[in-house]
Amino acid sequence: MQINCIAVDDEPAALNLIINYINQTPFLSLMARFNNAIDALKYVHENQDLQLIFLDIRMADLSGVELARIIEQSDRRKNLRVIFTTAYDHYALDGFRVDAIDYLLKPFNFVDFSRAATKAYEYFVMLNGAQQPIAAVPAAPQFLYLKVEHQLHKVDIDNILYIEGLKDYVKLYLKNEEKPVLTLMSLKKLEEKLPTELFLRLHRSFIVSKAAIKSATKTSVQIGAETIYVSDQFKDNFSQFLKQWVL
Image (cartoon, rainbow, N blue to C red):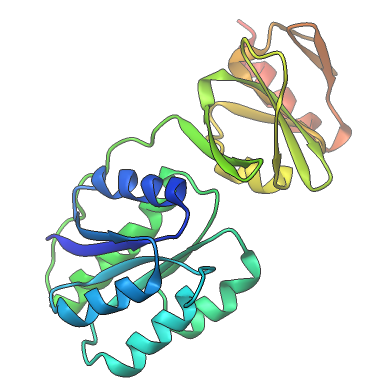
């Protein structure tokens, strides 16, 4: 089963990212893309076979929530659904008030996108009364898109050595890079987006790449010239890691 969808976002980099993810998802069929809600609204009314909208919330002239409310009130199709995308988590409640299928908080990766898209797939399977297996989704790309100085910055996961949390910011230290990448995000939020098989939390302020660990003691690891100590809170997890590591 194919789901006909459009993407709406006034940030070119964010829109291109969503388009890329849609094109990697076998059961999604992209019909159009828009950088404003007004043009998207006209398209919605003219295309009765549209089923799903990936919709940014904070846009000029007409917000994504306002667009969704207009569609909800004026469009008779019961099968048209929305997945919201936004960099502002305080819009979540507004998103679910208009019966959105899901809510993606930027920056999100392909794993997050796939979860939301799969929810949409399951909804349309249930709506059609069909028992269809979910189409295979490709393995998640090994990179993140992080907001750095008002732009989305691509970071290859394999290049991450370790990550340092600084209150509302995180620093990502990368291979062959003199300066770390600084992005506005909590360490906890970033940890949720990292594959657990590749990264290890050692401290309330540090996450390390398992592959980057050059040496280790019972209380610390060495990554390049940096020594990172294990806090009491994470000692048990670190001990389990050492047991798997030591031959």
